[in-house]
Image (cartoon, rainbow, N blue to C red):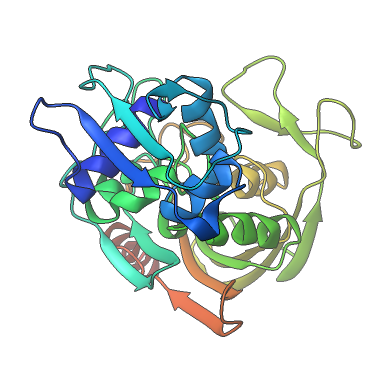
Length: 328
């Protein structure tokens, strides 16, 4: 989403359109605000927008003080009139709110945890310019447009296109910075359920193998013998929950969070996820997508310090797969 799109989304939610069809917000600097930098002043008056976004507006000439465009470092005086003004948005790359149904597992003023459906892309990407979970989230939480990355507002971690289950979104800049820190510190616990081919000889094990992009097939990732410039440390823990005829149900916990990590690691030990056309067999027909579900999230709330545990119910297609395997 462009910065112009950010501002339009915000103003749509706050009804700040002028009669000429422009978007405008006007503030008068008060006595206690004199001497403040322009970006700090704006961040206090518009708390839904991060200071970096407001600084970008100033760089693009969208902020005027007494009718003159000023930069983010400009010092304000009492009585200054500060304006944010923007022509009508005409942008093809903006992320627009879309009325798409999704299940909310937990929400408050800072964060939302939702149950992503399989086949729903988390954020716009090549081939998925609209109809994503972010588009849906912006429809319910317009303030999320100003949080985090320009192209991935509110997103602090991701799930693969065909992976279902619990995913966290930040609704405020405060929550975003803290959740990103928790992810990096590995303090958010993520537990998955996976149906895999075969019977695993070790019922409880850890897979500790670096992962990087497959040089022979860029869509895939693969394991490497050691961490290097093209691979990163990756650790996956699993427990066997049930065994069937040539198949197993696993509980999987991530210690790191690399792209396709669970799928790559399980395939590397000879037990690909059921339905995984990229890493397993294209002949799997019982389920239309890979049988991987983000079932559980545990974290300490970034603002109040309370423990949050959220579970996403097993989706119907995976329940049907398990029923078929049990009855073989």
